[in-house]
Length: 402
Image (cartoon, rainbow, N blue to C red; front, side, top):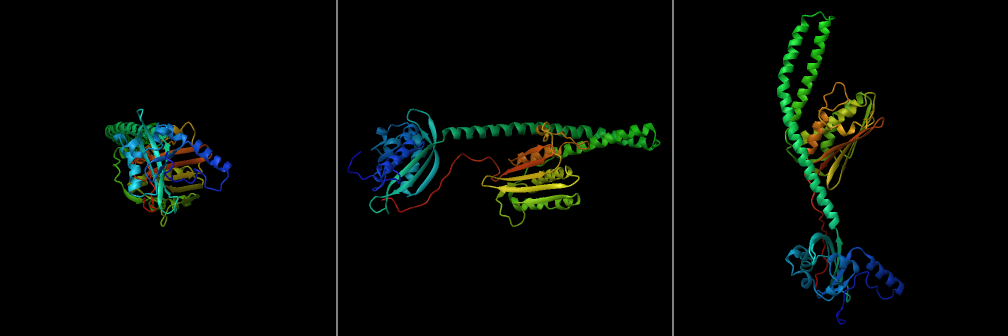
């Protein structure tokens, strides 16, 4: 490196005058042991400092980088267009802080996913003008690959579930069509025969059992029809806090009548929760099903908590009761059609709730322990779909680079 050229100084390398040799050595050791790559480019565009980690990340030796320009090293490969655009942006736009994930073409072949963070360095002369650029490289290839695989697995899972829904939908329509008419006929005939029998006779008891069975089948057909006829969500922006407050409101009086203390947190009018793309009436069915089940689990009273939490990605609604809970053996099947532990239930309500949640690109899960109550958790993505790749940018402007 030419001695006559003045080199901008990052805050940690080398140490300012007045600091002891031990402190300088400690700072150098810290920089040398960093797992992230570090590079300093001076105001003439030459690379004047690299740390050991940078060699492994960029697959370039220090002698191949020091004293050379960014353009000389990387511009010749068109595959690094996005990678090169970062340095172009911070120089031409005088961007003080820049943080972005890009793909880097390795000289020996292959690619890496890097998060590049840059900062403009003040000049040594007056500290007001820009004297160089500090660039930090973090290799996130493994993390990005895991993220991509997770997204692909999620897509496949949703595709398989959609195929299952389509098959179940066809089955539901067939059940509703093929069973309804025979059940209606059997029930009607049994009712007419029962009218001619003495109430306490054996025939009357048999006919009453037939009527009870047909009534149960009719309820099953009706719930299957509801499942089959669920409309596709028509999503629009909605404030989750206000929406949830309206959904919960009708259940307050029901809870009070059976001695259940219902509490709601993070929701209601005036709460500033993020908006999400939902079909408000359709998604309300999910909460109505969960709240109804919770109240049924506490016939002698208890506590019912409904809470909303929102971040930049999703809204999460948790509904917890202090009922009898569920057996661990039953938990894997609670969202399956026709699964129920109640003698007089059909077992379609939670299947309906699950389908609506998934068609909102969200999900619903359950956690429960016998004697400790149950918690249902509904997750709703705020963007109405899958999240994006890792990509962050933070920018601000200092004095222009001279």
